[in-house]
Amino acid sequence: MVADRAVLGGRAKMIEPRMISATRPRFAAIARLLAPAILLMPGLRLEAGAPTPVPVPSHREVLQSPAGLTEVGLLDGAAYRIDIPAHWNHSLVVFYHGYALQPVSFHIAAKLVGQQEPFFDRHYAVVQSAFSRTGWALQQAYPETDALRRYFIKKYGQPNETYVTGGSMGGQLVAITLEINPKPYLGGLDLCGSVGPTYVNFNHRFAMRAAFDYYFPGVMPSLVTVPSTFDDTIADRDKVFDALKANPAAATSLRNLTGLHNDANLAHDIAYWTFIVKDMQERAGGNPFDNRNFVYTGTSASSTGDDFELNAKVKRYAASPQARAYMLRHYTPSGHLGKPMLALHTIYDPIVQPIQLEMYQDEVQAAGAEQNFVQQVVDREGHCDFTQDQIGDAFDEMVRWAKGGPRPTPGVVKP
Image (cartoon, rainbow, N blue to C red; front, side):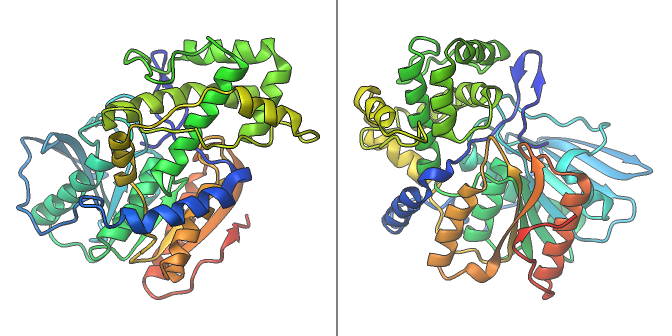
């Protein structure tokens, strides 16, 4: 299961934050300034910690089929799924799913599909946790998935090789895992990952939502604080889309500001950004976002007058220091990738733009770990819109590299 724009029952299911290329140098500089200080804060790292007892599932079901073995259950409050192919190569892929607005569930009789399928087809066992909380669940996802990995070893034996993969928010978790606990893994594959400093990435989303309110007052609910009842429905997106169509000049300014290609993408993201602001406000116990020093640029290609007016009139908000500290802890990367990580993106992603990875690359280079990072891009548009062959080929390249083979070639993946 991956982050995407799928809809079920009128509710958007999984989506991810994005980054804007026009402001990358300023954001990268901020991230570099923040990281050294934050890394000294107690509890920043998502506690890889000392070994803990392997948990025992409180519920467990197993199904044997011609395709192999599937196990689902509940481990420390988090649903999980294990798939072992009939012709298992005795190696393991640990998979992290993307941002989920609604709880993820696993059905034992359902075929393994999505980004995980190419790994299973290559005869790897695949384990994945649903995480005990929805939303930007980094705080829960890493320890719960590592507990599942350790349970797998206890139940099915030590794999010959272990790799970590994930899509969208799950790609951020791949980077986190290879920074704080690389030892169990040979390498990782980050698919359309929302990597980099959470505070920088999400604060930009907040600033863009504030700009939307300047151009379209009263269309969306309050930004501080977003009502707990807001749920990012299709109706919310339609309301934004209708407002954009009713004021084409303002819509053009916002598309220029955000780097989005069309009103459909913009309507999608405005509603999503509102949901994630709510998610982080609830997690952090207050408002972690601040646009008082944010300088808005790029609304017009021919004039700076529109930029100045926006900066003069947009509503400014201050962050709660305690809430901001929460977002900094979850997560500001160190860049210290301990094992090889290959990152794959589409050429246009309206939710997670490749510039976000470029900012993370700055962190990796500053940490002296650039030998462990490669970014590639495929000629497709959409969030995580890879073919199964592209995912499988990228995984094969990463595995060869992790086992001492050639380093993948950065840049465009040729058909």
